[in-house]
Image (cartoon, rainbow, N blue to C red):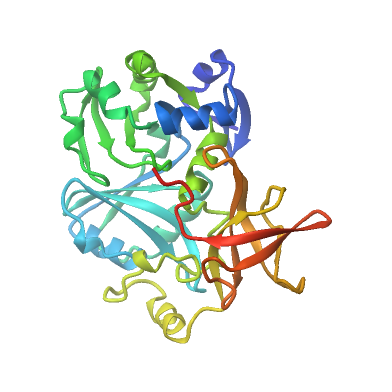
Length: 360
């Protein structure tokens, strides 16, 4: 098992450590509900240093990224980030990721921890361009400082005016004593805040100073369990659950990052799928009876016929009700439609709703 640069910090704080994507990671400190509500109402800091980072540089860096990703990379300007995916050749998704543009010949890709090796091989196998790739995953730590108090609490640690960094924009600057920190107005919680990409040698001191600066604003360290409930309340897809090598971006409601006026891998097949229509769609649902949906639980119609399956489910700490995502056959995907989740031996009523579940 790999350990992040902050492993000992989590152990000292009494975190429950679990294996995740090849790393020993903190799943919780005080408990998922306390940590979740703290991010929604105040401020939390996550160690997500297990994520992967690749630099793509050179005169044809943009051309390579335009080919291997589904979104339109040419729309990026310096200091802007973009959510996108790597389509495979079978109408599925190799991974979802974020691209950061420093300038026309330098980009950073941030990929899922469990897919680092796979993504690296995939992108390199399609690099017939004048583009140089560097895997710097083992050199960087990543802290997510999330919550409505993030700007106020972190402003004393940098000369950058944090309120000026727009959503999905970033800058590179000093943060505490750490040089060249990428300060990005991104995150996986839906409660605002920043992600800080830091060289490993600065990680411990930045972690300590973030906790110190956030003390008066109610900051807490947050584990992966609350990260999952926070992202699910927003309806953000989790790779390996809601999207994978077998799910099309069009089935997963990611048509907005699939730009057919660009020339990307498997474009023609996905365009055909768009024109002919998909056979299943990702839905969001609230459970109306008692019971918590979990991954792979069957979804049934009113006659108890299987029409799909759950991909993510939890008891929402913010809404105090059970929620989930899942795929159903096209035709059973309309908002307000009722269906049933098979929870052990019971058929539990649920209703399709619009995302996000949690509205500020």
